[in-house]
Image (cartoon, rainbow, N blue to C red; front, side):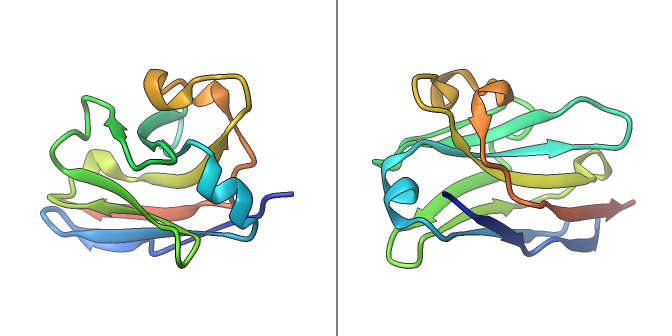
Length: 127
């Protein structure tokens, strides 16, 4: 079973930066699976923001491309999301998750293809 624990969220002013981290307990899943980040703002539907394949190929939603960077450190079994130029619209709970086997989250960025979500980390951006 995979356990995912997110951290790094916080309250920042617009224009600031944050680095979110997602520690995975299962090394085999972490190193072999497509993983991603999804956010949920109050009253809004989940929005997939980024994905990364096991070989490090990344994909981004148009809304965050150029500001968000997803990466992974296999030695630390940790997934990261670097967020720059934060905007109030980035305020949300951010979750990391693993792709469900047989689907293609990494290419589609369809959050419904994700399973084993973490508990989330809150990002709040003030103007």
